[in-house]
Amino acid sequence: MTATQFQQLAHTIPLQPGIYKYFDNQGELLYVGKAKSLRKRVSSYFSKTFTSYKTHELVQRIHRIEFTIVDSEQDAFLLENSLIKQFQPFFNINLKDDKTYPYIVIKKEPFPRIFLTRRKINDGSEYLGPFTSAGKVRELINFIRQYIPLRTCKLNLSQANIQKGKFKVCLEYHLGNCKGPCEALQTLQDYESGLQQIRQMLKGNLQPVIQHFEQEMREKAGNLEFEKAEMVRKKLEHLETYQARSVIVSKHLNNLDVFTLLREHDTAYVNYLMVQNGTIVQTHTVELEIKLEESDEEVLAFAVTNLRETFNSKATELVLPFALELPDTLITQTIPKGGDKKKLLELSAKNVNYFREELKKRKILQLEGKSDMERKKVLYLVQEDLQLPDVPVHIECFDNSNFQGSFPVSAMVCFRDGVPSKGDYRHYNVKTVEGINDFATMKEVVYRRYKRLTAEGQSLPQLVIIDGGKGQLGAAMESIHELGLTGSMTLVGLAKNEEELFFPGDSESLKLPWDSESLKLIRRIRDEVHRFGITFHRQKRSKGTFKNELQDIKGIGEQTATQLLKTFRSVGNIRELTERELTREIGASRARLVWEYFHPEEAGQQPASILPGPDDTAPDKT
Image 1 (cartoon, one colour):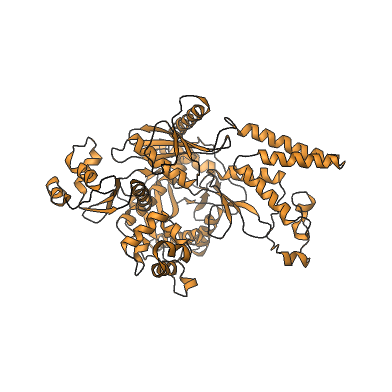
Image 2: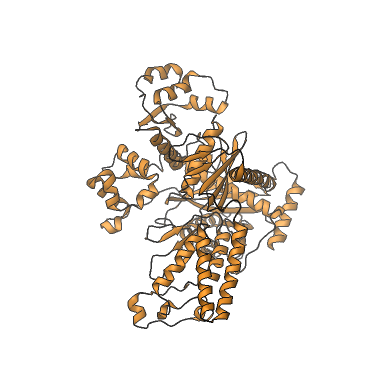
């Protein structure tokens, strides 16, 4: 769109606050932005000279402009953020963080169990987190169970079952790890007291837990139960040691979030520290890809909003290196000059610098441009480290992905002689699996890939990497068995977080040194399949293949869909709402349509089918 063409429609753009969307001539969404005044902001793209080539390229591609008026700048900020997360337009800031984070769930059941999960479902259970490290969550759960006995069995401990004497205490009771609620040896009130202590510990507030044990120790000593009092004293000692190790700054600080930014050209790194009761309970660093001429303030504001939402932060104070324009005016922004908050900001800066340096050190191994001998040397190391029967000159890697719990797709990348063979890359639209089922999806795409290779008489890879744990590796092996290809190639599973390698049938994983050449190549391949899969998703969403699901519902228009997204942030959140919650937002008749669409089984309808797709799509040409 030229400046002259824009002038012809400029008067039609409102002066109110809102969001604007730029589309190219293929209908692909290029960019989403917010504005205090839509007309002034959009006009600036066609009236000023940009120094950035990317911004100039964006303006040249604009073919159509759409806008949505909202009531305030805060609404515009929230709606922009929601649309960027949903559609990930090419020219918007890209938060390169596609991980799923673990939660600690307190199950909704009599005498609730606690355990780690990555699936947060609307079942009435209490979810604490998310946390940034599954390993640390497991360590924390083990630490908790040493001091607060809780059941680990899956028995239905209803009051009726307990009164009928259906259950007997197990070994955990005799080891002192459980107080035997199954035989009514522990009351529900006492059990709930333990759960409350756990909630305090997870919030970094150990003082109530310590006070509870001090009271228990005095009671045991008063009853002349000195051995039991000594056991409680040791628990107290360990808790106080844990508290001393955990408290980084002052115990008198309120709950707050700390953020720092490090920027290098078109890449930015943001570190986040969540502080509760003087204890750092979360720390996480993300990488952002900057597409246009966004300022440091715009980049950090984008990251702050996303990270606080991801980690469910309720802190009302932010410690920042500079002031930001944020939608929530009730949040206090502190730019410290000294004291404990300044120390926290400096600690956050250390973390973001460390992350950047580690990223450089662990940068994926690039074998392009290297001699044949240098490439072969790395492949010989992979053969030795993984104990492969042949040198892996042909390696393939599979990864599943879905968008907000919908539209499962898979990607496969191929490396020959240690470098990408992009003509062999494949995308897969999942055909036989309804809903999100990573195991069944992996089984389908592995079957399709190697059935085709064998049918066409093509060579098989020496090594196949399944991006996932034991479950997905097992599903892939089922397809290999069905095809009669067992022993024809080696399959390994790559755990997403710990970078452990799993072999079929082995109970123990293989951990390679983090700086080994073999693991660098495996990371390179894993990151390439992530990039390829995410690009596939982005293309399909922006072209409308993965359009806003709400607009597929008969009787629901764009205005209602936008209203729901503006309030509830994502289609995934809307899917979890009750009909009553939807009615409060959009009225009874439209609420019924939305609820029935997402709950066809309960509404007595046939479930909506997943999107059809070709057997495998054209290879990557980038």
